[in-house]
Image (cartoon, rainbow, N blue to C red; front, side, top):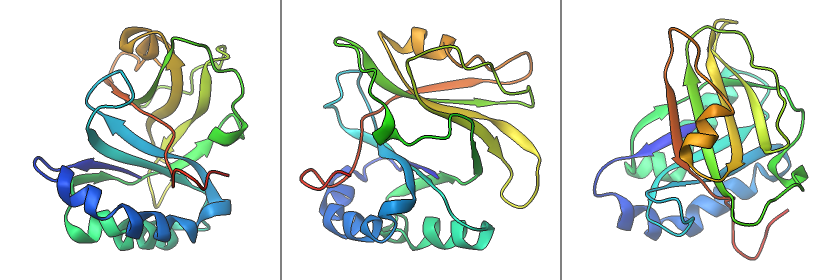
Length: 180
């Protein structure tokens, strides 16, 4: 699930952080990656959205997760991308140990029906295919990566001939004092 914040919702979102974190606590062992996308590459800028990759049993559980989430229920999100995620690396963001000083973290989303890109970079934190919620249709790919800048992040996950690539500054999310 990637919820894109609606314009002007930042203060509302910040007021809901405790409710959001409490909701996420119920999914703690199922989370693969989580965190906000940001306006700037410095990791401290204003939030523009929220990424949550969660291992859930079926489409109904995914819908419940997405649409019962406190930010969604309060109207923080202007739109929600809800897909299945085939975890190609088979790990969570907490398993990533290759951090490089001076590199930023980015959410990269590609659309299009090209096959999965070969994973050749140690800078992939989480990587997988995006699939339709109710069938096997491939929608694209997504990765959380570290890279020196947005352009380098985009090169780690090219869209292919008929797609497009979005790159968003991102940081590890969760309750500040209660990381896994």
